[in-house]
Length: 66
Image (cartoon, rainbow, N blue to C red; front, side, top):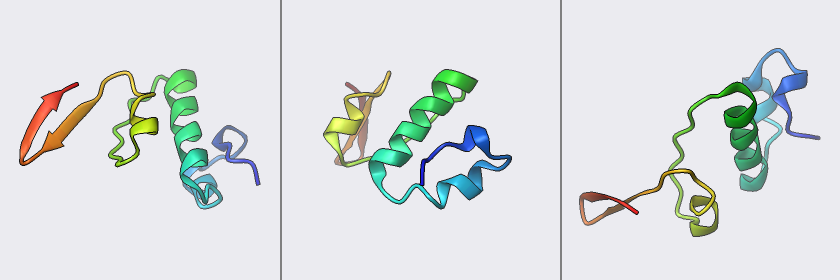
């Protein structure tokens, strides 16, 4: 099933059908671009982090801007 909450009334219902990380990430990007929503995502995946507008790194209890 396509991961697209713009055809549904409730995004929470749509997220149930986003059963892989790539679908969820694409949904976040679409929400940000089309609705101007802010998205805060925590990931261990450097490929997904590379697509973010701003990236912070947490290491040994310290937060730094990359």
